[in-house]
Length: 427
Image (tube, rainbow, N blue to C red; front, side, top):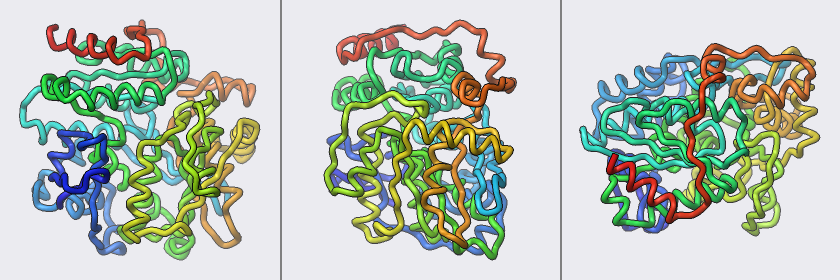
């Protein structure tokens, strides 16, 4: 299947080309223009890896063999995504059972497999921005991978200390840069890198954000895993709420729906960075200055994946009725964490945003799922402050918590970033 640049439709590439390039001309996102229609009933009876292999094979086409795709997913998806009941009509899809305790492990690990195929032994430099969980997932997925240098930009002081420790303590082929600014400024720096064609070619630069199609395709798979765990008599009433920042996660869910997965409605749950809910009401796209919130990984005012949602709408495979956009403020986020705790479920601010948005949306007879995108211990300070009780650290966090961070502080200045990248090439 060929993928088309949303901004420059004349640019069409294969899956592996899109993985290798990351972004297209004029910073355009690669995206399919048509969608396969797999046998959903058959897929829902398969295991996670078997089902995911069938889905991605249908999306990728014959560029990779079925054995290749199956091996890649067997190497990437080595952990479960359980659907855990919270109440009679609400469950949480827990996506934090991978090595960095966040949903980004699904996309990051599959991308590492896909890039190894796409690069075929050639050297590459991955430059990516993170608002929290992407950094750890990408760093661990590519750690010590031959021929790959990884540069991660993150907003200094604006992600949780434990999130930061998971990716700033590795060193070796992982370089981490603490940017004096917010996530949108980090993302803007990454885009400037891609606009510098000479630099891109010199260092064979790629990105591991959800703008890379391999990460997005991998995320489709856990929506099928969620519905497969729903009782058969409730599958036609499923409503899924997604904590939304850069909107890759919501896009993946909408693609799953476009493929035929019976999702009645998707709820895009944002924090105070509510560009999409305001746009959904007014039709005016007006990003404001990013504000810091308890759900920091969603502190994104200009979500980069939104053009893909618009493309799905333009293609007619989803409609406005398939999406509800809800903003959840800080007070309601705190209430959400407490309400979940009262139900016997320990959660954290991002999932709490999705839970509160879901509860506002859910109608009688519907079955609600909210995405648990990160382990509560990754937000230990916030959750302990809200609940007043201590949280034990899982082994992965306890191991890195006492280690020394290796980040370099830089201003939000492209010239400084360019110098860092060129120095890495000389090292």
